[in-house]
Image 1 (cartoon, rainbow, N blue to C red):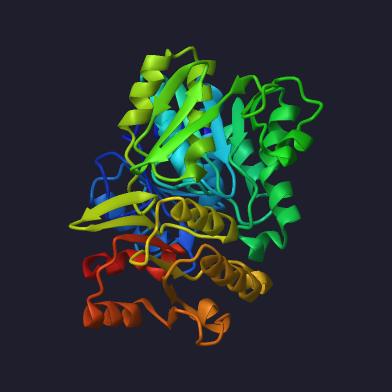
Image 2 (cartoon, rainbow, N blue to C red):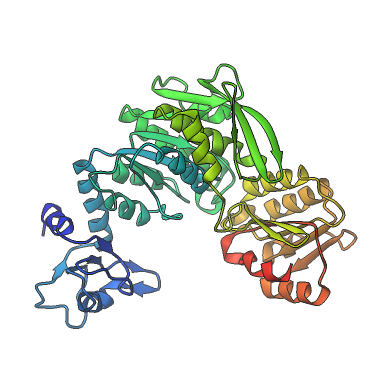
Length: 432
């Protein structure tokens, strides 16, 4: 069956499902496969639960001679080609966001600004890969005016492939940092991989937003005309000035208008600026932009502020790499830390051969900003440990840290919690 024929089935369905446990009546079920699952085995179950059709790439028990079963060569390729076909049918303006840090926060900020005026859809959570991007595209209706697509990658070539699916009209790279070095091999590899977004837009004569404070971004697009810049420099198209970061609230000034947020950390300065610029590009008033920015409250372990009696917890444990870890520690240092303040850090994953060196640098950074209480979790921090003369406690696992906190019942005034998602640092909240 051709993609155009499958597309007709998609249009007449109630949407796409890739999980047989969550079926809406008349869904089109796509039997994706992964390292530990095979969706083909659940095709019949999906049909029994109300799916209109099930697309498979290998037969399993009871799937033969069933007119509700559609056999294709590769279900993942089918999903991606279906998304491309749909993208060509809709007139929605697509904004693509990638970068090493801040993608999801920036995407959410742009969304709350643009939806003040336009029917807007954005990537849910961080469904930003070769599966999440086509699913988001297929969730865009003809009535949707703007789609904001987050793109993640840990190898070169991935952003290029995602661009070919989403076909963005405008794009922004948050930054180039030491993330996913295991796949990208080096910072140079990160820059080349993320810049595939700009390369696509330049080839397609699309629009680009550039953070002019980042010289690397300027170099990547120095001869391209269809770009807008923002930053501290007066040469930027949109000039911003940092006002303050008090009581976990970040304020920014542009053209004599002060934008206030409920967001913690100086590292979110560029994320907020980008959202403001997108608002201005789409002719949204300052007041409406401000309403959008102020309505955004960080959640899901991303710069999330949690108040507990006399303790303020900054929970930023969704992800971590050397660049974001350094930024988080710098922001914590500026937050009036005392002898009762504490940093709890978990391993940074996917750094490959750079792991030990980068963890050692973070330990040195903790000592440099003079944090009095340092709790480090994970094998890489253990392997990078300094001698025991320093006021640092090391834990092999989150369970060991939990036992320590339960036993000692130490009360801190401010706590920064940051680490890679797999470490599970959010589990310690109840013990602080």
